[in-house]
Length: 400
Image (cartoon, rainbow, N blue to C red; front, side, top):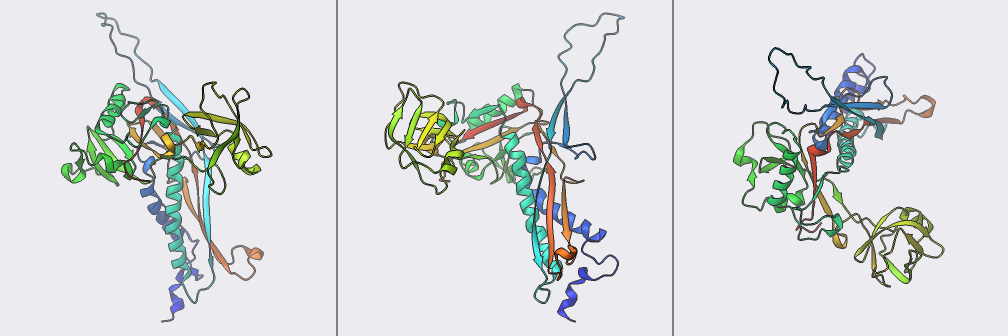
């Protein structure tokens, strides 16, 4: 048998084309199969289908609880009753996607195998991309706890403030006080492996094999205090990103004018760097400042406010203020109750495969040299109830 016969989906018979209905369904299924396991942050949200012919806005709905019926009934009198009270949260979907080009060198590799392999890796990319969209939305919630509550801000987190059972208990207690319902009998926590490392060393930790849940979640590693933990390397990490294009560390220069709120930078910065610095939250010594202007020609930063007693001197490091104390990474562990947030469905139009066969571009590909396979998706997420989700920020004892 000729090796070229392996390329059956490029034949012209009915049902044999790569873009036929049967093959399209197969590749769509393959893409979603590879994407879904990576959608960790989607799993525990309220799902909504993409609106068809309904614009770019999707509406999430949450039924609000009734107050207690504390007034006694009057004999023979029917009370007024209640109407269902729905909270509506709208969000705008955005489109994401990517593709790869497959060459026509069929004597080396069958086109169909290339497309299948491309679909697998694109599914991985799609899953991580869409998971990040949801992750960023739900990590912007206002219900936040720093370690076990001993401190009140992210920049106060040092290496000593790791995840503990005390922090878990406080987060779970917050969910209970907020009347958050459990998901399949438990609250859920999405945790980074570096944070899980610290928690798993506690004597109260139960590994999955110790309680052997029948409704086991992919990535589930254990539980503590009625909360089941799902491990994901995609859990949010707040980092002190580089402030320069080449990673050079910025340092305070010789000129600091507290009255004018200006700070010179040793060695200055470029114009593109100046533009990116505006609006940044900076850690300089013990203080935190927001850049309101940056002049590349003079190497001067203007910040929102420099207190008269602030200690600022030449040689002091200027760091991004997004991380913890001294710029260490800060890890988010999300503790989630039912209906805390909403997400768009992956199936039914949320995620789809697009395949273009060799020659499908017409005059744009006059020698039939290129086929493409790609994906695109409409995606959004929205927090529906702040009390139903707690973000616990901690350090890790492991070096990042």
